Image (cartoon, rainbow, N blue to C red; front, side, top):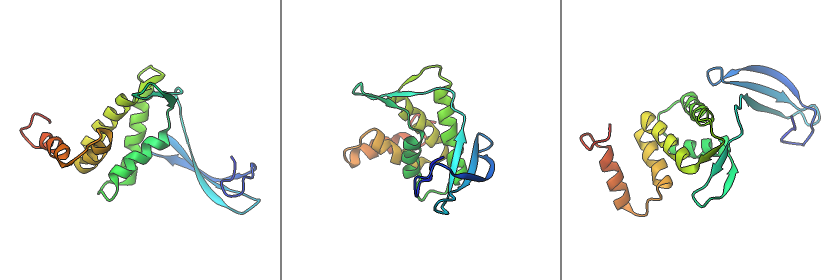
Length: 154
């Protein structure tokens, strides 16, 4: 593993342990060249996924990109980081288990929104505001009205 600080390719693993409910391995690494320490995670990847954007463009699925957008929606919310990681891992497993290698960005967005709605309504609205491209306060009003009891949404 290449050192992120100095670029040395000969780094050493100092500690390994299970992470994210045993779906990943967390490794603490040490670089003998610069004495830098860093952490890596190893996960099972069932298949290489390709995201098909709404404009038809294709790009490799990036778990970290999806995780970043979820973490932005979850900022300052009372949800443990472990629960967020479990949710992200569950979404990735769900995408990989579809049997398809090409996944539409719309499908990914819907799955993320579904997962967020079960964990935190504020994060759900935050993510939806970007995903659905809200333009003004009226868009928020309509969306939040659907969340209220008796609106038809569970």
